[in-house]
Length: 456
Image (cartoon, rainbow, N blue to C red; front, side):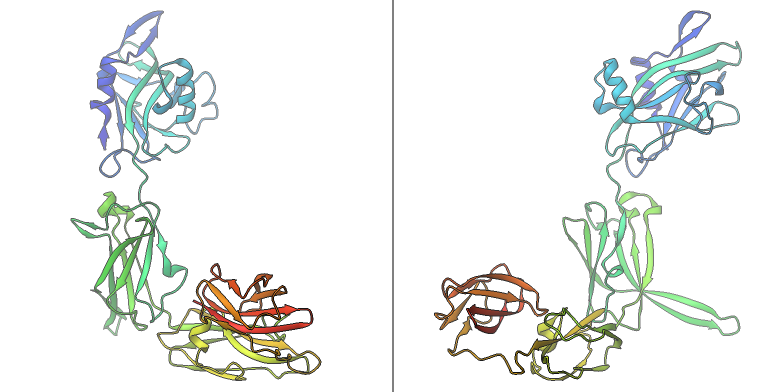
């Protein structure tokens, strides 16, 4: 707790006079008879939801009938006093700016009154703004002198009372809460709501990692001995210093229980900001075989499997019919990694999950081509081809003279069109396409030629 006695009271002495009305007489009240206290948050300033304490000294007490009590139905009637928080960035000294700055600052409400009626706690009906100076605008609030029964009405503006903190840091979660870590991973991201000044303090780093061991100590009562084993990890500020990347020396072990400790109090000074929780890596993939878009894929029912590391799964093409012919498998998450060594036309593909290729979810799609007139697509009369392949910024079509002036389309592995145009020369720009495998179809009248290329 910090007292504004050294701030607000000095301001009282030099600038502020509390006006009291008693039997028509205007008197000055000694500023030492009122104390205003605001709670400290961290090193400096107060929190944006802080409560403010106002205390009067003997022989004065608060007249509760004049206080804007939070729980009183008539607290906002004219018969009661008003307490406004003055947002000083908008106050210039004029009556109009006082009105505006008070409404922006917010209306104060009395949350509680102590038993001897000498201390009230007020709160703002809305949160304070970050990193802002505030004062108080008090009107119609009354004090009673218990020795003389005199009633003092306070109408005053108190400036420079307190300043709110900068936006406080908050732990916002981790990347593995959205995408579970597996045994192929050795890093994850810890998210915060604001930029971190540092991740290392005199008390140590703000994020640490442990592994947890639990051993039965006594079989008769099933008690456990829980042991924490710190593990080595490096920390790196990323994404504008709002995220902290934690990298382990080794990949996550599937049999270990991990414990993440976020020591945010080492930066904020508030021990309530600390958080710890346990998690495990998940070395199981959910594998789904999809039917895919109706235009390019033969309709089949979606089927799902769960597969652990070290297990194998055989993907089998469902029996065909006279309208479609199987062309290839694809994995939408990583098409090149899984199928670069398989034949395009293989009706069965066996995959084995390892720590290198596992994903929390894998989607496999069997691709088909529709047969025209029960025969394969006619092969082009010329030997047109694509180079360079793989390509980076453009592809060049050799022997393309029969197709220049005609249209072309580029589709991805799911058959979705990603680019189209007119082939005006032998070059086509592919600079804007993401990396992956694509299919180019050149058309000129009834003629068409499909070709495959890879974009780096």
